[in-house]
Every structure is written in C-alpha cells, then in structure tokens.
Image 1 (cartoon, rainbow, N blue to C red):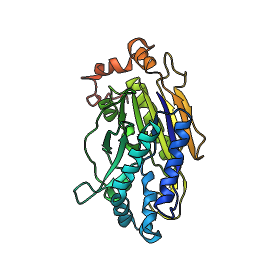
Image 2 (tube, rainbow, N blue to C red):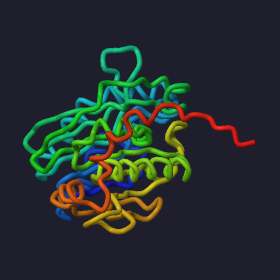
Image 3 (cartoon, one colour):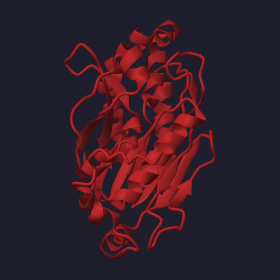
Amino acid sequence: MRVATAAYQMDFLANWQAYADKLTDWVSRAAGQGAQVLVFPEYGAMELATLAGRATSLDLEASLHAVSDLLVDVDDLHADLARRYGVHILAASAPVFAGGARPVNRARLFAPGGARATQDKQIMTRFERETWDVIPGGPLQLFDTALGTLGVLICYDAEFPLLGRALAAADVILVPSCTEALAGYTRVRVGARARALENQCVTVMSSTVGAVDWSPAVDENTGRGGVFGPPDTGFPPDGVLAQGTLNQPGWTYATIDLQQIEQVRRDGGVLNAAHWSDQAGRDAAAARVRLR
C-alpha cells in the first residue's frame, strides 16, 4: 500500500473552479507518484467558507454552515477524482450539520470503485466544545478496502488509547490533524506513534500548515505529514517510515508492507497487540503507599 499524506495549506478561494483545480492538482500529483491512499487533514475543508466571502469566513458560526452547505458538491468532486485517478481519498474533514442543531466533525472516505464512507470525530477539543460547539458524531468504524483494513482517528482522538484499541484490527490508521502550535502538533504525533506501538500497525498523520487571515478558527497551523510504525522487527528502529519538513506544504510518501504488519504482530521483539489483554484487572486506581 503506497500512501501520500498531506501538509496542506488552506487558501482564500476565488471561486468554485479554483477549489476544483487545486484539489485536482493535489490528487494528480500524488497519483503520479504511485500513491493509492491519499490523506488530507482535519478541517482542511474550512477554506471552502471563503467562497461565501471574507465576512462569512471570519464569522465562526457562519463559516460552519457555509462549509457544510457545500459538501454535497465537494464530495461528488472527491468521488470523481478517486474514480478518475484510481485512488482512495480521505477528504479533509469538515463540519457537517447532519440533521441536528450542532455539527459533527466528519471525514469522508472515497474508493475508486465509487464506494463512500464517513468517520466522525469522537472527542472534541476545548475549542470545538467551548467555542464552536461542535459535537461528537457516530462511532468508530473499520473500513475493509481492496488494499487493506483502514481506520480513522481524527486529530485529538489519536491521543486516547482506548479509541485506538477499538481499531486494533486495522492495518493502517489514518490520523488527519489540524493543530495551531508546535505543542498541539507534537501531542497528536505522539498519540499517532503510540497507537502504532500498541496496535503494531502503521499510522498516517496529515496536517494543516501555514497562516491564514480569513478565519479565527484555523488562523495558525503547524504540522507536517508523517507515517509511523512500531519500532520493531521489519520497521525502522525509531518507527518513522517517512516524515515531511515542518510547515512545508506538500505530500509525504511511504510504502507500507502489510506482510510486515502481520509478521510483527505474530513474532515481533515484543507483542504489544497480543498482550493488551494482560492489562485487565491491572488498570484499577493504584494503591497509595506511604513512604514518609
């Protein structure tokens, strides 16, 4: 499985055609490098709010609705590009008003044969819950594709081990992220690497990068693409299969050998995935011992 993961710079879009041209360029470049799975970042879709004008994109609530209102056309474009270039695309996540008063943060997955699926974020950051009032959506899912089994943990979700464990059967976990500061990027990166260690799988992290002056929500962005595995048999000793340059837009590529994942789970130097259940009964609050 050859993956391409994005460090994605959002733009102020002149019109719909500018967005379609931009997305087509990104997809065509990755496909031209042999990528089969393309991973765009969390909230990269917020640039669509600029199609409604600067006043809308600068208004937190209005920007949520502006993006959500465009997603039928956005998703049709992604589906067409997935078919045309023969790739799987995890689209940049977006706020979606899915029949409720408040939006969920939803990533959408497109297969080259026309199949579509969605994954909602599970746990909201402070900004999402306290300022934007974005809410958790549907449960975690596993996606069985022609290339292997995929899971998706959106940004903050990757920092929670039990969410990662729910996707223990995945060969590859996609981690689209949107982080303002280096500290936030590092937290998600550490989470992605920890999930690869625990599940003895590969995680693929994408990021938004760069500054924009048209949104108070995604105005500063720090990150890079990264592909991580367990630091064990058949993988790099530091577990880093590939990583981009911090804050430099573009694709980062890696080739993932699913047989290596199977082998390390079966006969690695350690067996984290198999030994997970050994924690049962040991995860109660530790007893306090007085040493004074």
